[in-house]
Length: 199
Image 1: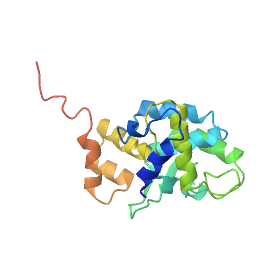
Image 2: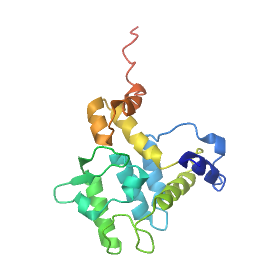
Image 3: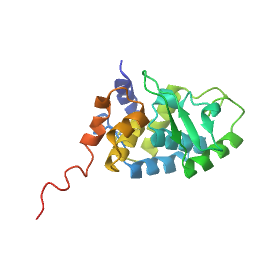
Image 4: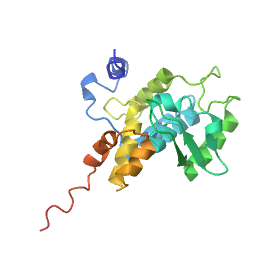
């Protein structure tokens, strides 16, 4: 059973979502902000909101987010060392001021662990646990369509492409080995056709 099939099967447990309502594969920046705000109401609100923020800003897969360690983060220099799954290319990303405020708070509030995102039992957050949290939070945010964690990674790519960032730079940022994995974002950038017709 694929991840998408599993997520669609889980949709029936969320009251605001129908299985056929999954119409796209990414979230807009505004929708990510709505998701972050909804996550703040969760039992582990700051952890969940920070996980969504970091996954979106750095285009992390669920499997990349849950293995993130404090040793991967240089708060003083504002750097995040990203280790990619699926034979992706690792890279070093800048940490924004917003992330630089959220991460130290998370470090202070969470039990001691080498992992950034941990469960209630103090173990690293599991991929399934993270995916369920994102889906539940999407339901709480009342989007009306099924939200899954990979929408954050795609949302990152689409945001960077829409902002006019260089395709090769986006490729390196997301850790794509092939440029073909990146061009889908630039292909759907809303501004690429702006100057086709001038009246």
